[in-house]
Amino acid sequence: MCFQFDMLIISYKEPLKGGGGVENNVFETLWKTRVTLKAQVLGWRLLLDKLPTKAKLIVKGIPLQHSLCEFCIECEETTKHLFFSCSISQKVWNMC
Image 1 (cartoon, helix red, strand yellow):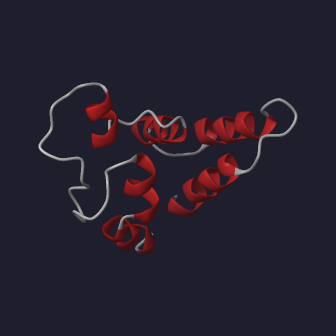
Image 2: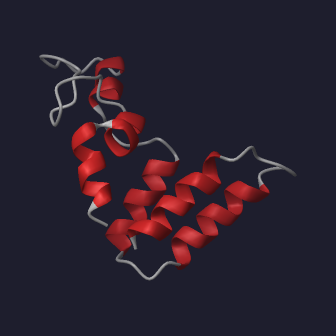
Image 3: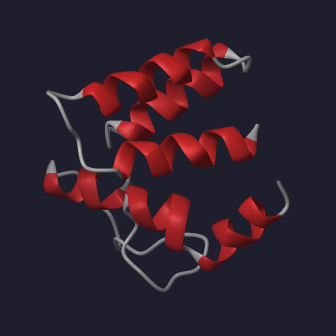
């Protein structure tokens, strides 16, 4: 399932053509995948960039000690960093 989800992300990042056709296909594909509802909701929130990362919590005024990623302590914790560029999460993706 990791490969399919990775392909959804790649498709979603393509330029939208024809009024959001690619975006709709990505969401349709996401909801039709044979994974748990919990995984689908995570994917949906990921694609919409609606996960409560430290960077977003700080913008909302929630006090935190720092905004660094808890896994690598190298970069600000954003959705993009957590799922695509964090050295630790890359190791997890490579296991799929």
